Image (cartoon, rainbow, N blue to C red; front, side, top):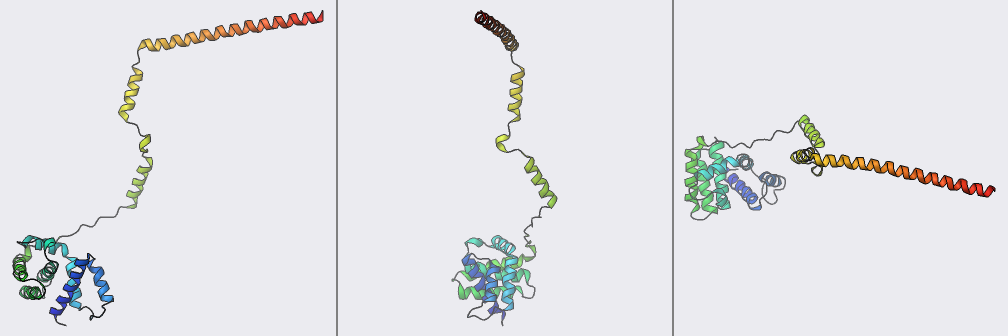
Length: 229
């Protein structure tokens, strides 16, 4: 099948994914498994779709850099996907001459876009072709998984950490200690006096209890003596 047809089929899939907000590779898998009434996707169409998705950040960055009118997110959906396909061919497919990629993009734009789109697309793609060797690949950094030792250490640290309600501010503790230690001597002496008085009170009470017990014993003896008589 001609590559022109493959480009158009690739454009249809990219356009649909863009309109639906669906993952490109997810929709591609659906189209491969269930082509419906259409013929199966051509191999080159699948290659284009996968290539655009793989390098989409770099492609969109280049389009934003060299577009004089619109950023990618503000372009018409069909225009930005025509540009994505042609940029992928110019930058990543050495089998397709840049002139052919641009001409094919213009042909799609004339058929599917408005009257102003071809000149806009031509200007952007010409600039990309002129600077394609300067376009730097944007690589998404892959986060390294945490090692089991790191996770274990983090869990241990979490278990040892006190819960918020039980944590008291160290400065407050120091303030309380300082305030307690700096209590006036008079207050401490007063406390000693109170302890001494309390001791005296205890001795006095013990004496009173002893006298009461003695009186009770005397009364009991007298009552017993009267009974015997």
